[in-house]
Image (cartoon, rainbow, N blue to C red; front, side, top):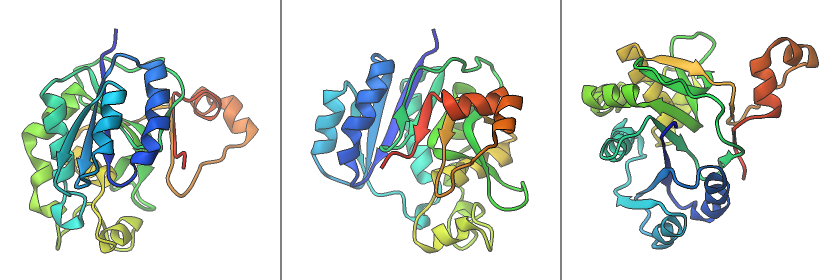
Length: 234
């Protein structure tokens, strides 16, 4: 049986956790679950984690743009302390609709989910952060490389935020990004990023497909009608 670890980063959105975790535990009642509070000292976060059989860790705020990819390196620290076949990072407004039908067990490092491009050219590819699936091989490789601590992910270089992209706007707002720092590290390490049809995770823009498209592509059909994970739910 596939062994999955689930992770949610929390910062002033703990009110969404009960709905998210109720759905998660309905389908994955025994999977390891850990929450990381990113600089939010609210004791309710730990109470909710305990209620749903999860772990809770309180850490300093690392989601500022000046911290680069440190936030991802920290979550890999916690995952690798008790590793499993897959690490799945979701958000508090993500919903687990059912169990996954297929997660490939392979020694090849893989990152999976809903694939997205940084701009009009495929120079930088990532997975939308509402559901990011990282297999053990990829998690181990990324952590060992220490690339999430690379100064190129911090100002002034910001290798994950090319000029004229929405990533640059995000960086200017003062925030870093799980999605795009992971995408950059995957590019540096030649880790394959795979569009997983069972994940329907979007931000700002939702993809719409014609009926003909859906009938001609079973992956689109699964994503549209029977996804395992959907995002967002706010």
